[in-house]
Image 1: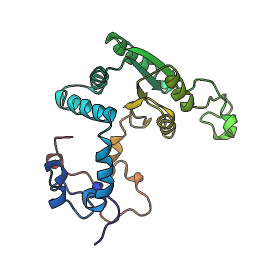
Image 2: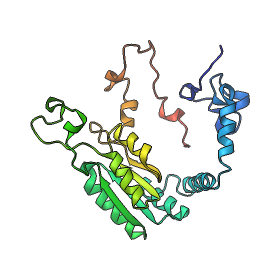
Image 3: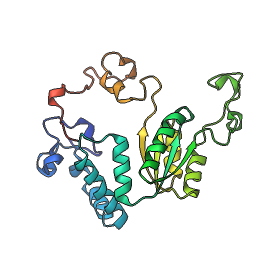
Image 4: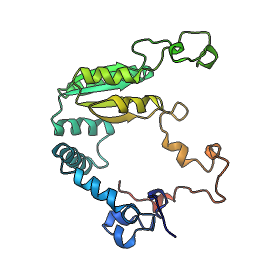
Length: 234
C-alpha cells in the first residue's frame, strides 16, 4: 500500500522507531521519514537559525533536568530564565483571573516583569459580530466578545518576549497564536466539562465519552493501550 500523508497516530506501541533512531529501517509505511523526507529536510535546515536553535536546545535541557520533577509552571520559569527573557505576558480567560493573579505573583517572585490581559478586555458587545441575542450563552444580558486579537496586540505592544495562555476558548486561542509576535506556550487548555483536563475525553472515549464518535466510527475503534504498554518517556 502506498501512503501519501504521515500518520504517526497509527504507529503501533511496539514500533515507535524514531525513538531509537531507526525510522528509516523500522518505521511503518506511513512514517513521516518514508512519506515525506523532503519536508523533514527543510525543517531540519531551519534549526540553523540561531534563535530556533536556542529555543530547541533550552527546551531539551528543561525537559531532561526537570523530567518528572518540575510542574508545568516550574518548567515555564526555568525555560524563560534559560532564554534570558525579562518580560512575560499572560493571556487569560476572564474566568482565570484568580489563577493569573497567582501565576503573575510566582513569575514576579523570580524577577520577571509580567503583563496580563483578560479575554473580555475592550468590552465589545457580541452583537458587533452579528451574534443574535438567542445565540448568547445568557440571552437577555450583555455579553462581551472574547477579544484574543487585542490580547495579542497588547502583549506585543508592551514587549512581552514569552506569552502564557490560560484557558482561552477554542478558536480564540487560535486567534491569539495568529497575532502574537512573542513565543507562546499554554499552561491551561480550557475544558469546562472535564475540569480543564481535555485528555480525559480521549482516555474515556470507549466508555463514558463514547458520544465523541461520529457516524463513521470504525468497527474496532482505536483505544489507548494498557498502561503497562505505554512508553514512560515523552
